[in-house]
Structure formats: C-alpha cells, structure tokens
Length: 361
Image 1 (tube, rainbow, N blue to C red):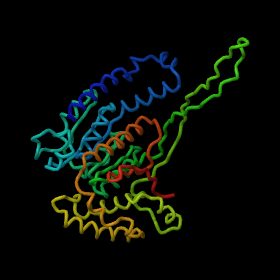
Image 2: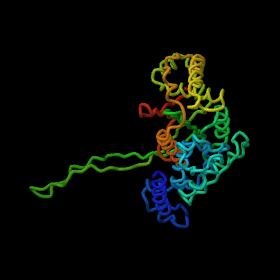
Image 3: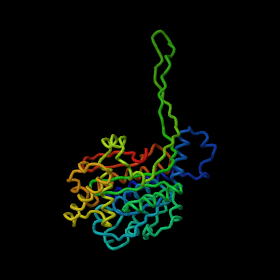
Image 4: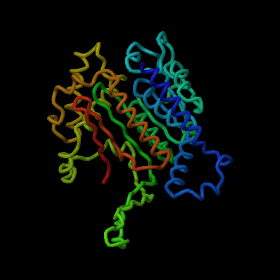
C-alpha cells in the first residue's frame, strides 16, 4: 500500500516539476520581468533546488524517508552512501528495499525503487564507507545529510562542510525518539510577509449606497540572515555557568538523551538492540550517570524508564522525522523560509517535537 501511494505521489510531483522547468530557454527574461517579486523569488528558489546535489549517508528507515522526500521535491541529484548490508531489522522501516534483499548492500538495494520515484532526479548508490572518503569527495555536493554515523564521524564531516560552505545535516532514530541537527553556516534566506492595508473610507455614490470598505493584503519578500554553530560546539555546551543553569529548565531532556545514545554508539559500535535488551538497558543507565555527571547536570533529567523506548527504529517516527529533515534540506537549498536553528527533537511517546538552539552564546 505504501509503495502504491509513493508511486501516485511521485507521478503528481513529476507532472508539477515538468511545468516548473527552470531552463532559461523555456522562460524568457521578459516573461519573468512581468511577474511579481514573490513569483520571481519562488522561481529562483525552485531553480536553486533543481540545481542542487545532495549526499545522503545511511539507508535505514530514516534514510529511506529522507531520500523519498528529496527525490520527490526534485533535487538535481541524490547520492545514497551506505557500506552496510541489509539486515532483518531493515525490513521493518526501510520501504525502498525490496523483499529478498537480505545480505545485499543497503544503498544498492534501495536504488531501483528510489529511481522510480522521480526519473528526473539523478539517483546514485555508493557502497563505500564514509570513513574512507577524502575531503574533496564532499565538495561535489551542496548539502550533506548523515544518519547512522558515530559522533566522531559527524563532527569530522560537519567541520569539512563548514570549511567548504556546504549545508550540513544529521539525524537519527532511537526507538520512539528522533533528532536532527543542522549547520548551515552563515545562511541567507527570504521569508514571505503579509501586510494588511486598511481600506479608505470611500465616497458615497448616492444617498442610499456606499462603496464596500475592504482591507487589502500585500505580500512582500523579506531577506534575512542567520548564523549556525558547528555540531562539536552544540554538543559541548557548558552547563556550569549561571546563564546555562537558567536555560537548563527550558531545555528539552531529549538533548541529554542524545548525548547518552551517541556515547553508547561510540562504546558499542552499534545502537541498542532488542535481542540484547537486558544488557543494553543496564549499560544505558550506566552511561546516563557518567554522561550527565560529566556535563554537570542531575541524572534525574532522564528517569530510568527512558531505556524502554529507545530500541530499534519505529516506522512512524521515521516518517515524521524524515519529513522534517527533508523539509529542512529543501528550505536550505532553495533559501526559502526560516530554517530550524539548530536541533529538532521528536518524542514519539508524547507525539510532539521541539526546536532547540544550543551552542555558544
């Protein structure tokens, strides 16, 4: 059923994309000059998106959702990079992998269905390990999105992207919890603002008739600029200062949960597994005490029951976070609408998400 819906959506997206072709040969400068500023801005944003190439690392459930959204949005090219093989767990949330693909490379197994979503997008599969990629490999992309990566890899790639002016994103799913982080550097974008103009009083047209007094609206495009910090800085917030302690009360506990789960991934070389629930739960509680103590915050921020909800990938959580992450990549590439700066956390238990701006003040 999901594949059938994806095909229908992709066909509609392709039809729309063909009517919005950005080739200068199809739209003369004269015709564009006759458009309103908002139309010209929308056209320019779409052209930027259609000219963008994206690297997506990690083709598990979240990676599949992000890939689907970017392909249907109509980027120029998408490279899916993953060196891991398809496991039984991947079949639960990764809808791009066909049945009978156990043991195949995850990126290569996802390629055919991904290409079928939108033939206008150049979709490629790369089966190599991201840790073996040189710096110049990343410079061919306009945006890089990481999933399933260790903390050190994320920090390293973020630094490379920051140095070369590449939009950087990362995200992951841990059971009912999900997060994304963005570093867009010094990012400029336009935002649509609507201004309401009060109507004039009008002039009587006769003793018994008056002109209707209606308020008119005017849409303007406002240029804005926002500066992002790097991931290393965002994960190394000093909570010992008085200002940070005051902000701690307003900070989502998901930030500290992320720190714990990334430490687990570093120590174990994997995420918590359902088949080793007892062992991994005990280790998660130990890491929680160690990590929160090192950050100078109380372990009470994460009650013991958090370990019950951070195993495996949940398909609905992948869909929600994949939609948000895909949307943020599209907004960054098109330079349209304000981006999330810089974390987004989703809690599937409560069914809500929150944006947090964390880093040096």
